Length: 150
Image 1 (cartoon, rainbow, N blue to C red):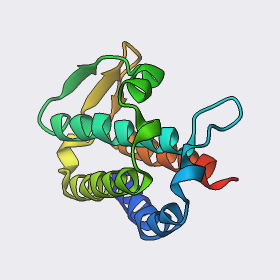
Image 2 (cartoon, one colour):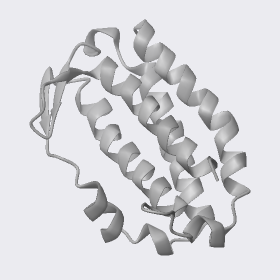
Image 3 (cartoon, rainbow, N blue to C red):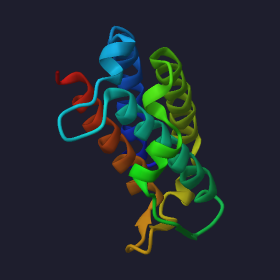
Image 4 (spheres, rainbow, N blue to C red):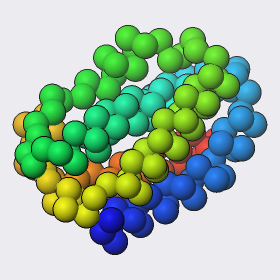
């Protein structure tokens, strides 16, 4: 595993050691309350669940395919279609945690020779698998900060 992918796996593991305890302290009512001009905490975590699912496919398939193209992700439509706002908060937290534990496992076991394989997301310029792993963790941390900020 390259330095970039290894660092991303370590950072994600560190997040998983601290964030779940903070998440479970948030009550269901608070998690469901819409934020001014944006998603509720449930919807943000739902978006992170979608991100984990999308990246699961990217991380796995890019290991055995040199060049991949994935469709665009319509985040608002996906969050609304799954009605994350009405899902029990503890269920969302558990799903998010388990998906991300599995992603850490995948990242740690990705072969070095697969990390330069590229993916194009929604017709954008291709990026490497190593970049996708690093970017995934950055994205996750950004949205967790939104959840914890109020």
